[in-house]
Image 1 (cartoon, one colour):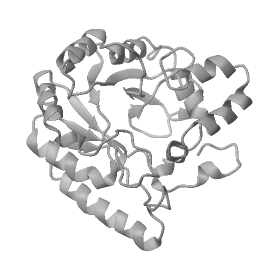
Image 2 (cartoon, rainbow, N blue to C red; image 1 turned 180 degrees about the vertical axis):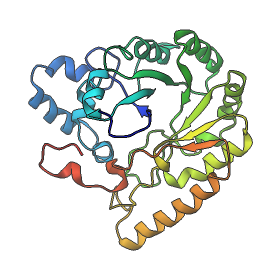
Image 3 (cartoon, rainbow, N blue to C red; image 1 turned 135 degrees about the horizontal axis):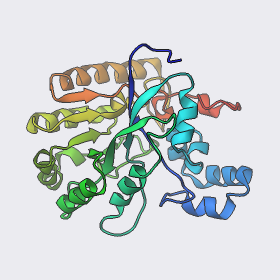
Image 4 (cartoon, rainbow, N blue to C red; image 1 turned 120 degrees about the vertical axis):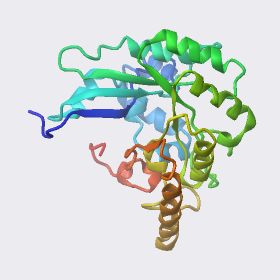
Length: 284
């Protein structure tokens, strides 16, 4: 029985299997997959501290997460449809990122009690000279392909993990040249930034009013709930400043009517939560 009286569409899930797909943990699970406790300890030691502090528990990185796992996590909630968002696929070759779209498209969504696969947000770099070819390959790989995510999260605190090595990705001329092609193919864009970069998303949206933009994880205000990195969110006053600036910047972004926001990511450790440091079995 569904606990809610309306259909649920989950617009942001990740599917992966480090045992079979190109993934950072691929070598580790192949070597130590039969010894999960040892593998877990090696992963904790080998993962950079700032990345560990950002993602928290390593179990979800080294373990498969597939449709059956998602169904179990849904519990009594009946999800009608899901959208897979690129999960940092590490392939080789010019069109390696397209392999993720092919792989996800063939997962057994829509069978038995599993939700339908409503869409795929793949990975592609608008600054690449082959960007249009990659889009075409994605579109040919699956009728469910709906757009791309190009992460730009870069934080001034060196203790906070950067998902992109430089700031200003969304204002780079090479990026903008490719980004314009999303309108041609009627595709949308997922933006992933830290809250200090929200003005870049607003600027991008104002320049391309015909391209739907979705802001991931409410803009990710790192440190808003507690200290992270080397100097972020150390005091209540600092955390209040992070919150006030996030609130102001996201209000400006909200004036762009073609931008939507995903209410997600609120339990990511990079926001300042400490639950992942507790010696419990719960993953929160």
